[in-house]
Length: 90
Ligand SMILES: [Zn+2]
Image (tube, rainbow, N blue to C red; front, side, top):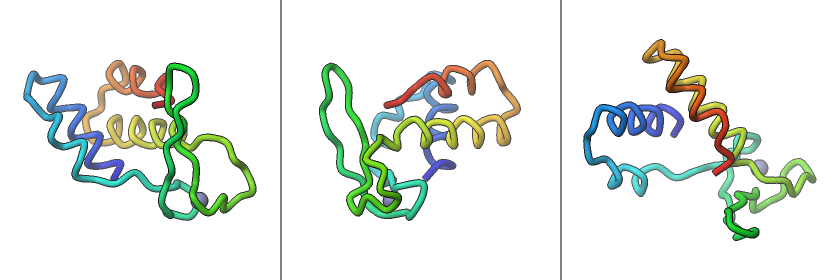
């Protein structure tokens, strides 16, 4: 999943139309790889583990974006672009 979204981000930044890629890799809990449930909170969205595997109802989105940023940096060696991903929580 993180590879897919890192690639999509790279292609998006190169000017390609890649919105279609967002629907082809399912976001999973970074702890148990289980499904996530998405809750609207204020103006944003929080991704919570369906099984609450760690007894922590907090969102998983920020950690997922961190993993995507790490993958992006490892694959493309571009910290400036990866830094923009690290600030995301959804
Ligand atoms: Zn989980």
